Image (cartoon, rainbow over all chains, first blue to last red; front, side, top):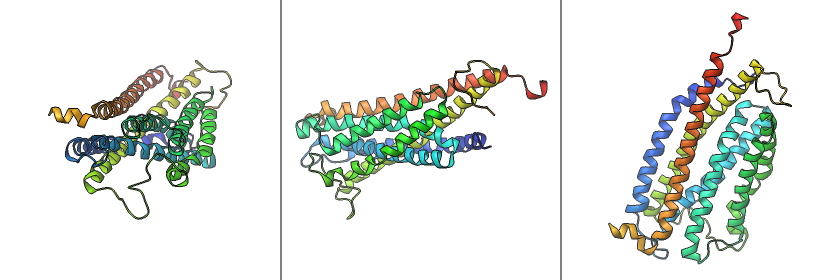
Length: 249
Length: 56
């Protein structure tokens, strides 16, 4: 049985990759902050508030990217019952929730001076808020059952149902009239943004991506240990929760 | 230098955006590392108390 999908091999791999992705996180974010705050020019319309873009837009990308990764892991869990997939989804959910919260908060801080309001119930903002609630729902489901594998399955089903929201977020600015501006980087005919602003934006986006990879690896290692601890406690006959009758090892 | 911190009059929006982002990302990182360390210690303690298979 591949009950732990060879955690020893994963631990070795994770330990080998972790220093590199963490180093790249620091490099990209360091360079990104320098260009975002110092080197890049203020916008001709938005002035200095455009600097909020360098965290708001990458945070929004990461919010959707994390959710897509969780949905993929959830599919792997439900279809192939791959045990590491559940631990990966469990590890990624709080990171995705954090990026979504940051996207909403920085968007609000950008909206107040530029739109004159902290919040509007338009398609883009509302669909991102729903994404945030989907993350919270998953985190709640993961911890709602005595048997973590049942919680993992419930959260995976929610993740797969909720993935419909990701294209809705992406295309909300095209499908509905909204206060939010349309895409200026990820569009069919290429970016419309000036290179002096594209560089810090991409550096920050890569920095956030490497942060996500590093922290996901670290958190999966932690989840493997939690599962191992549970199996050990089960074997010792202590701390055996009712309804968690699964044969361990 | 004070021009830099003034952010063209938008300091009250730009700096909180960066500050909150830094606080959330660093906070989540520290919480994750702490949880990993405490679980490592717990597993080690549990394995120490576990009779080895050959001993039974």
